Length: 87
Image (cartoon, rainbow, N blue to C red; front, side, top):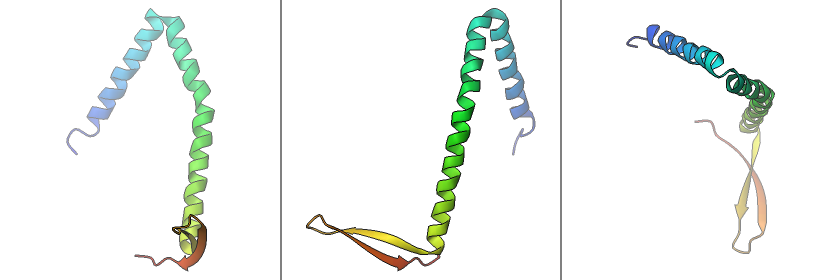
């Protein structure tokens, strides 16, 4: 990839300079923003864990019989099971 190690490094340096400038020029606003990011971290980690649980459940389903829901014209639900074939 062209410029790979340098372009992300330059981006990180410039971003850090923006953060430092904000902390110096408007410390109240900068600290409030950093506080919101820190408070959002547990929420992010919760949803990340929840997403991984959903992925694990889907992988279990693909290995077992998977319920397939068919809707009839009478709007009654019929549940059938069938084995999925791996492609």
